[in-house]
Image (cartoon, rainbow, N blue to C red; front, side, top):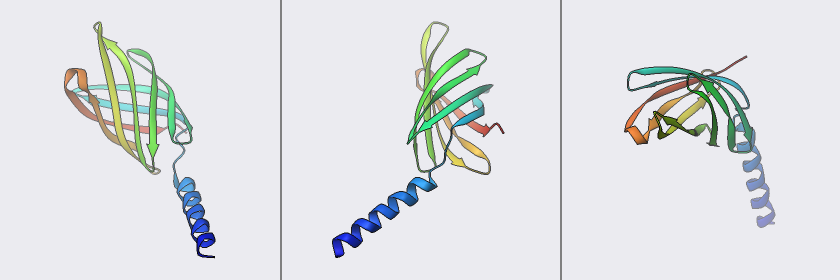
Length: 122
């Protein structure tokens, strides 16, 4: 009887956590500020379970993003080039249904960081 109760509680908790997880599928405007340089991208995110994928279009062209979602924590990144050098741009933020996603952005190859915000296009 105790085992059946424990299994029921675990299943209920898992369903509650899944229901609370945000769905980030859709079109997003992403504003980034790194080392005094601001840029904007139009992104299309697709979420499958806790995995995030998609494409973003900005001043540098189109990039493919990959990422993960853990509760309200959102991480995504893309690889590109800048003046012939490889470039990784990594975003780490927090999702809030009222404001979107806000957090930090890191470009390790150039040892620079900054911040970003992303808002869902309605």
